[in-house]
Image (cartoon, rainbow, N blue to C red):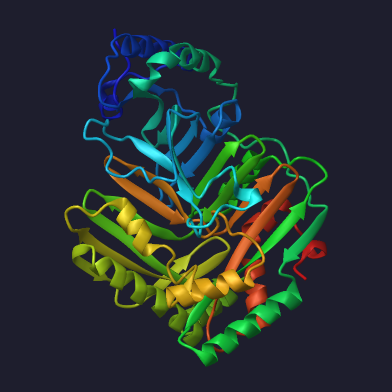
Length: 467
């Protein structure tokens, strides 16, 4: 009996043990590649429903790169762990996927904050823009787990031996179904801020002067904090620990090569597309959560009535609405911002929904929406010019779109609340929207609050506080 299927056929299939799934995929690959003929490039996705597996447990056991993890922000969202590469698009967005592509097919990846610039040394492995069709995916949701093997035809006809060997080596270690690992992350040995406190204050001063002397209304300035460790940092454990303390966020992990990874927990959606329907959000304005119910309510009210935060939020609302109007046949935006409440912070949010015009692509949307004023500024070009002038580091994939695009939709988060792991070093990035009246000391405190998720899982105390 043939127990492989395309992704959309899964509901009618019985659940398999990992061993049976490995055997079934092996047979499916052999049959598929034995029938390959010289023809137009197409993708075949062989899928097998498996016993419940924990995505982080599964990916940890694999020794195939790249490795990635993606989990949507909404409750009950599908979780994806993936390894290997059936196809990749480096420097070219995987838009207008073939009509013959299977339903549910997805390319995962992201791009640089400034994709027109050559990536710095720390970001070379990621590229300016890179999307991957994984060789193997584990997709898990409330309905169960599915193991998928993607084939690129006819190109994979010559790779049969390697693919079968990879299937045989897929790991399913004991205890894969649940449970947090009984390990601890190391404490950082040292910290370096770029810019430091004085440099940050100078940058704020330069921004305030720019507001007074030109058309610039808002600029988002960032800081890079590098932590050094006495041993190699387990980036997968970092990602798993971060996900555990930051519910209500997009969780992502992209490891293009061993020892280098980009990890984060972003509260901010750039857009989600389902067919011709699009959902985007304006997110700007931040406060921490309170230590007591009373202080929490006070911080909420302070955010909802802050002239500075409401003004900053309005730049983002206005920009996204104007951008999407040019792509949508119909569109609606919430009249007033509301509170997005997270475990350790809160933000102002306004949702924008629309129906796209025929022919609009995900590449069109990304090119027009990124960077929003929430991560760049307003007007865009003037803000980017000042960012390039003042920031002494390459943002890389920080604050840029990260997510997936497929045959039936797309979803992208903004890569904030994120860090770059390179062996014994962790670089964390955080940025603030600077507007007329911004106070350097208050903005510095907010930068610290925005890395609080990482601080919590790393056990960072006063001895590692920002300086």
